[in-house]
Image (cartoon, rainbow over all chains, first blue to last red; front, top):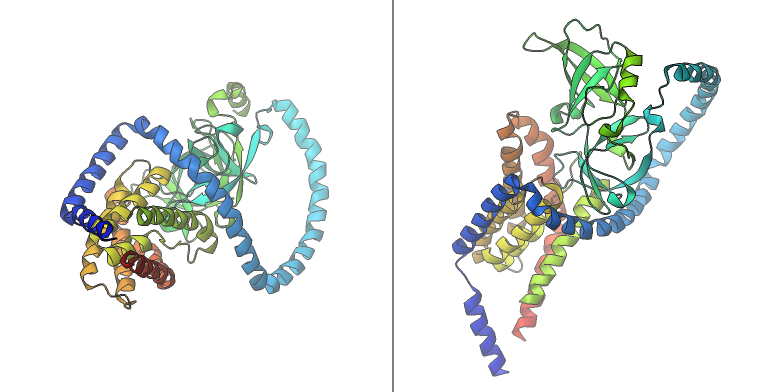
Length: 300
Length: 167
């Protein structure tokens, strides 16, 4: 017993370094790591892949538990709201039934037009993979998230992610069973967009400060462009990463920017990012679009 | 010693999973509490700057590897916090539950300030008031609320291991 405690004491004495020495060492390691990993990104890819491949299945498991609990909470708080919503929805069903009839008629017309234009590269016909969001960026400032499908399901970097009929974002990083998606509303996002009605191009970029009001930014619209509130903005043909023609949102508050050289506006995204849980990844890259030239020539 | 090290690593990973996967369903005012700050400050306060720095370094690296586009910056931020709060270890008292909560709130604010400077201020986003009001203060409050409970657990663990060591 005495021998053991003596050994522990010696161990303890040996272990206590000067905190400043440790701070200095780790600080230096961090700084070197920042520079090296910034300059040579590929060097750390295997390590990153390893960490993410181990963490993701855990997140996937714990996410289901978390969702179960939060759903249980929601049941209590939402009953009144649901009843109200139910009445509203019943009224809406009648409206929609009516609308649906009109739309079915128009669909025949649309099919005929589509055949005419030979637009078989429409994004509704692209191959897609469904995925669930399993974790979000830990600092709450960014709108980056991780989904539970990766290279195993045919997902690659730069693939477009949609939900419903609107653009969610783009895959920026991918591993065996996970993929990182940067959403449209993230501060670092900048997409080349286009007004569906007038074909005027613009730049759609995320803006954290506008986001609370439900908007993101649209800038670099031509001064002469005749665009008005509620015009649809879609991804443009000149974008090198985004497939053309995916709906991003609707513009509002159009004005002239500070430089007096172009117009700028707010954009309301069609996707509800607050409650986003499942997304679709289009498993076709922009480069693989072979009949693009055809699409463009038809469009003009 | 090794057992405690492994315990801290497991705790950090568990809290990271909670923060990124579970608490996203319980986000208040659009922010998620910074759970990783709690073990960093708790370990630094109960066991001194060296262990605090190691905890911070590991926590930061975890974020770096999964969500940052380059490695080292988050590790650096948590490292500095582990070092600074470690000096409060000199006045550590087993029954004191006020000081650690104050330390966590200050550290969380400092961490968010550094985050703002590195990722927003240097990118020309100068509207500090907005970030302060919209992100920093809610995050500090939410983190402190969680830490009221979580710090107790860390403190109990520390007391338990100390008794265990003495025997």
